[in-house]
Image (tube, rainbow, N blue to C red):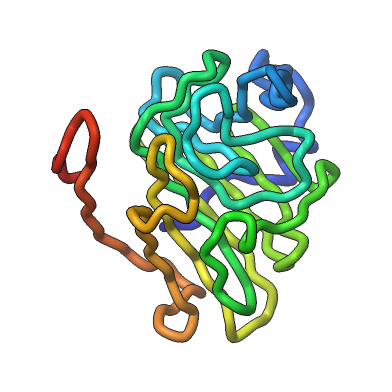
Length: 205
């Protein structure tokens, strides 16, 4: 993880002069639109999106504008506009207080008034935790920033999302950063490996 250089307020205040500034990633994100507010570069490997729907299921994008609770920020291979998911998704969520693993239990209320969606960045306030979540993308990865309130119980949770599986499936695996064990006030390098299943069985990722 690392801090990002994107200026959130500047993205709001700067004049709309570039074609990119006229793009609204939230169009088509309600009901049967089958799109999601992807943060990515053209032809980029990494697509990041807020997650309001757990799991990877055909015809069910990870974000729905009508939903009022966010479960995390997901790196997804879902093909926006096609209703077709793919393998390899991962969700990152910041929490304060008790650690919660199930998507619906850890989800936080949010308001569209405090949500910023751009093709190059996304930001939202997790109201239940008073945490500001931000993400931007590169061609191959992304940068996330979570701004926590003063607390001695902060968590950053990572979960691998399995295709077409229930969120309570025991084959889901979790990596949790604990504020009591890791210094979340500065950059921390993480190295992890997992084996895929299904069409690319036992391939390390």
